[in-house]
Length: 223
Image 1 (cartoon, rainbow, N blue to C red):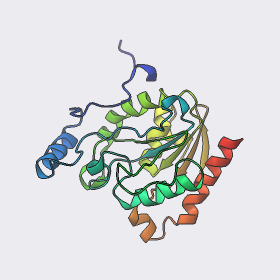
Image 2 (cartoon, one colour):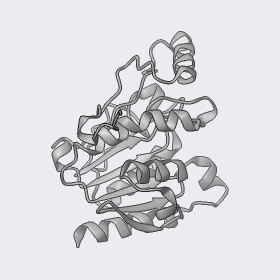
Image 3 (tube, one colour):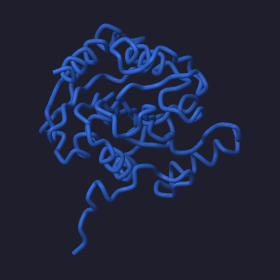
Image 4 (cartoon, rainbow, N blue to C red):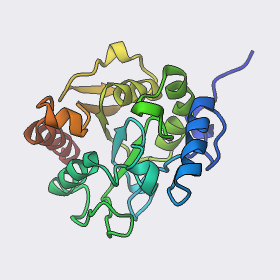
């Protein structure tokens, strides 16, 4: 009988040419041909300068944006979502205030890491269930490298549900809701609507609503 590998035995990062999701591989190769100077590969976790051992807060996103992280190779860099996210992280002491949407801008996280539930850009920004499930091994493997992890902020339902599953629980036990807070496997999980331009333009997510989530996470970590 086969057994599921323990998180500490799972890889933390996929290879640059990860072959596991055929649809995402085909899309990646299409964009490598169109834009050979872009990153066009699985986007690695963004860690603080002090390394994985210092991480207390994890930000879980959905997947790289086509012209954002897929282009630059850094999570939430090069599209609107990063403008709101990194400004908010700086406001609450989770990053310095150097974000300028370039990988050479001097941005540094503080005791915080950022990872996507799906590491490769999906067509129409919509990964399918099999891709989310396949990529969770890297999500779980990366979380296992954070011995001080105390809280996760999940951006959107897909990232939330994948986080809950990676922590060993069913999503129904910790349902998604904006500014909801659940304890899952000893980790505090705070959920937010995704900070996409669509959500902010339609008013589904306001800056104040987004700040509320991080204010609660910051207060929890201070306790």
